[in-house]
Structure formats: structure tokens, C-alpha cells
Length: 306
Ligand SMILES: C[C@](O)(CO)[C@H](O)COP(=O)(O)OP(=O)(O)OC[C@H]1O[C@@H](n2ccc(N)nc2=O)[C@H](O)[C@@H]1O
Ligand SMILES: Nc1ncnc2c1ncn2[C@@H]1O[C@H](COP(=O)(O)OP(=O)(O)OP(=O)(O)O)[C@@H](O)[C@H]1O
Image: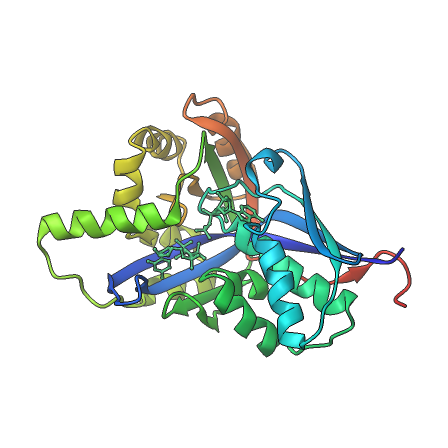
């Protein structure tokens, strides 16, 4: 039986500037996404119905019912194409669940690309991007990969030029954090501080560092407006960040809504040393070394295309 496989990367946000709460419950952002070499794999196999199974270290934390974002993506694609299609999706999960690395979004993006190919729809990238934006704010970037600045909810993307590779270590925490709860905590903290929330602005020095491959400057410019909220909800992450800084990280930050922490390293060896040190912490479930940017998902057939 033919099947289509796609590998989809996780993300880290190298700048996450959060504007005021909108009437629709979302926030306008300046969200500089960077795809890193931690991948979920989504395999789409011919089937009469749309179903999913999940394998890998994090499988027990992922729903296999209608709550799974990959199922929602396949359904949305079939609806867009105006027909009933089936596929069994097998997700090989390596991206930490509820970790702030857009794992569910990666699986949704993978399902869109894999099913578009399996079903022979040939829909253009723009159509997939539109469907992606309805599935979640991070899903369009999961489809795009590379490095990009997101505005609006984070779904309006412009690709950014970069030079070379940046090397990262990720400290995966015990347990996850709900994205909605972290945004809500951020709003509460801002309200009690009583300051007016400024409109988010792109950090030009950070874009320049990405464009020239200047890791030291990038490390110094990493910012995340959700970090204070994530640290309030999970105070033990302060220890994780401090441990990475003590090991010479060029920058240390909570990844997106957390609780994964991201550390920019000087080179690949440094990233591995950071990961080895972080993995020993009691606050850490695991640590990974990775690099970015990496491209978004591309489909490949496991047997000759029918
Ligand atoms: C934290 C980030 O991962 C950074 O890339 C994203 O902003 C979150 O993206 P996501 O997980 O795809 O989030 P969505 O599924 O679109 O929204 C989940 C919840 O997060 C909050 N949310 C999300 C995006 C945004 N721009 N403003 C928000 O306030 C809302 O409460 C929303 O109900
Ligand atoms: N395919 C999927 N993989 C992981 N979680 C999923 C998936 N589908 C639905 N979920 C649900 O979504 C929740 C958030 O998972 P996810 O791993 O996407 O979080 P996240 O990485 O913090 O997201 P983001 O960084 O985009 O805010 C999980 O707790 C889980 O219940």
C-alpha cells in the first residue's frame, strides 16, 4: 500500500512581542519564528476514514480522537477540496507535547502536506497556508519552516534571510503548559502592573543578527513577552535558565509559551555540552541539541507514486 511521509520541524521564538488583548481573545504579535531540527514525522496511509495513531516517547500525552490537530487538519483539507477522503495518519512524536515548540501545529502542517499528496489534490501552497491559519496561529509557520516574522496572531508570515546555522540546546520540563493559560497569566500580570501595553515592534538588531549569522548578538537580543508569565506558573524554570547561562549559553529563554527552555550555543559541540548538563537537572525531563533554521515539510512516497 502506498503512503506519504513528511518530517516537520519544531520551532523556537527568537522574538515574541505580545501586543494588547484583542476583542477576539487573541493578541497581535511580532513573532520571529525559527524552525529547528527536532522533527515529528507524519505518515499518511490510504484508508476509508480519517484516523490517527501516535508512537514515540510523548505518545501517551497526545489525543487520538477529534482533539488531535492532525485529524482536524486532514478534515479541513477534505472539506476545502469538497469531497470525502480517508487517511490513516501515524505520528512519530519527537517534539515535546505542550512544550512551547509547536508540536501539535507541526503535526497539523504535516497532515496537510501528506494528505494533499496522498489524495492527489495538488492544492497550491497558498491554499494550505489559508487552511493552516484557521487551525491555529502557529500552523502556518510549521508549514513554512526556515525563519520568518509573524504578525497578526502570528499567522501572517514574511520569510527572513539568515546566514549559516545557529546551534541550540532545549531543556524539556516535566509536564506541559497550556498556551491559553500562559497568555491569560501575561494579561493578568500586565493589568496588575497598570502599564499601557505598547504595540509590538520588530527588533531590527535581532533581524540583522539572523541575517549575518551573528550568534552572540542573537543570543543577547532573544526576548519573550510570555516568559514572565511562564516563570510565574512554573518558578522552577528559573533554575533551568540559570544552569544554561552558567554553562556559557549565548542566550537563554523560555520557548514560546513554555515550559521548554531554549539556549543558544556558540557551536554544535557547545550545544551538546549544554544539553548534557541540562539533562542532569531535576527540573528537566530531557534535553536535546539541535540546529536551525531547517526547511518546512516536504512529502515523499514510500512506494512509487500511483
Ligand atoms: C505562543 C506561541 O506558540 C508563539 O508562537 C503562539 O502564539 C501560540 O500559537 P498556537 O498554539 O497555535 O495558539 P492558538 O491555538 O492559535 O491559540 C491558543 C490560545 O492562545 C492564545 N493566543 C494565541 C495566539 C495569539 N496571537 N494570541 C493569543 O492570545 C489565545 O488564548 C488562544 O485561544
Ligand atoms: N498532534 C498533536 N500533538 C501534540 N498535542 C496535540 C496534538 N493534537 C492535539 N494536541 C493537544 O494540544 C495540546 C498542546 O500541544 P502542543 O504540543 O501543540 O503544545 P505547544 O507545543 O505548547 O504549542 P505552541 O507552541 O504552538 O503553543 C496538547 O496538550 C494536546 O492535548
